Amino acid sequence: MYEIKVERTGDGRYIATNERGARIELSGDGQGPNFSPVELLLIAVAGCNIVTTEPLTAQRGHRMTTLAATATSEKVERNKLGPVTLSYSVELPEGDADAAKVFRDVAERVEERHCTVSRSLREGTPVNLDLDGV
Image (cartoon, rainbow, N blue to C red; front, side, top):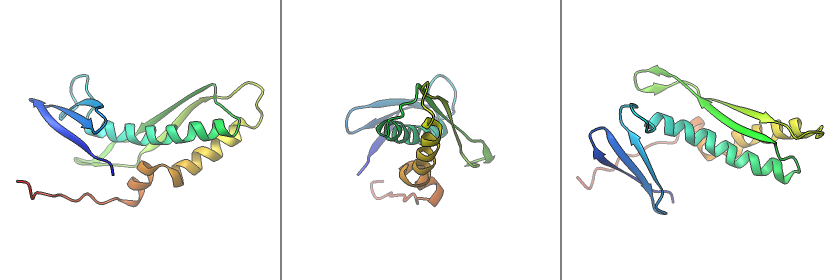
């Protein structure tokens, strides 16, 4: 089970913590240096994909020289995102003729089947509101 807590620390400022003690500051209005909730969602998409794709390509003997993932989206309504686009910036290992194909195959399979965040967004995981503690 995953659990995080988000607590208000000041006007428009919040801190998210997990059970292991990690902390992320966020802002409700997207102003200032902290991530907004929408940006955190995009981090989750890019992060889930890259942390799954990278070790799988390396296990197959094709460690990319450079690897970065970018997730982008835009609001299509005031409170709804449109499609998320995930793109990679990759520098292939020199002299590895199969690296590009292996990377593409793994990245596609990860996004379609193995990334929990992508799959949850695509399939529309419900959010249940529990107000029993109010």
